[in-house]
Amino acid sequence: MEQILFYIAFTITVVSAASVVLQGRVMYSVLSLIVTLLGVAWIYAMLSAPFLAIVQVILYAGAIVVLLLFAVMMLKFDETVQRRLRPDLLGVIGALVALVFAGMFVSLVSCGCFEFASIPADYGSIKSIGSVLYTQYLIPLELASVLLLVAVVGAVMLAGRR
Amino acid sequence: MQAEVIQSLLVVGPSHFLVLGATLFSLGVLGFLVRNNIIVLLMCIELMINGAGITFIAFCRQMGSLEGQIFVLFVMVVAAVEIAVGLSIVVLVFKNRATLNADEMEVLKW
Image 1 (cartoon, each protein chain N blue to C red):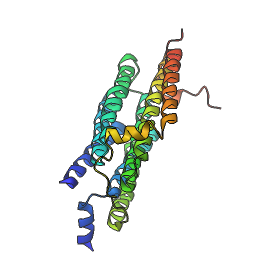
Image 2: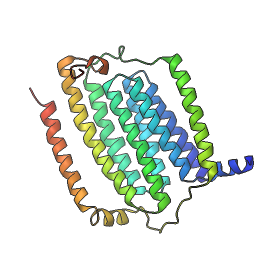
Image 3: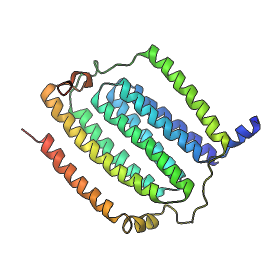
Image 4: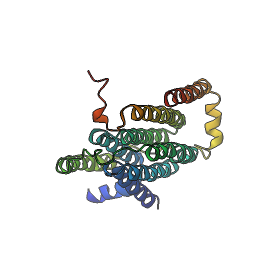
């Protein structure tokens, strides 16, 4: 069961990520990116990180993609000059990379040198993440909020300039 | 030997997820090299960040620690910041030069 779920998620994620790269039109790339990000959220859920899966859906597939969609739809740019794909060259490189990855996959998987550790029942739950985040990583958390504030001010400054 | 390989392909371990992370990362790199639309380049950065995130989570699940998940959380915050600032720069550049083609933006190139 688990391997079926994994291979479905693998296929969806990789195919849609390839579609992000290879689509000619930017709009289709953004829509493929949504599928990729949802696939990554699925992978996070499979790796017993449910909180991160939720944050991935809300923050990435929600906020960031909406921002990208706004930019794509607001700017009237020329789609026809945006292509630099060389299909012949791309095929050769793609075949080589696929070969390397197939070798890597078989060797990594068949060596069996990685095993999942046994984990407590509440591993990755919101409670356990929160208790680490608000004690041990409190200062980085505050710095992240300052970074967000600076980014908001900076984005308004940049885009709102006359 | 072959039966062992097939068996290890069927039992999902950390290496499966590591391969997926590496694949996502290299697809992002490929897109960064091949495309010239700035918005698509930003999306390829997102792909690379997600590949690295999967690697983080796979390793922290393998070791049974929570630090990797905290790290990916911070990386998501930084990615959101990067997209916000990056897109505002894109809008600004588009206002000034009326193009999103990265090849035509060579003011800073020496």
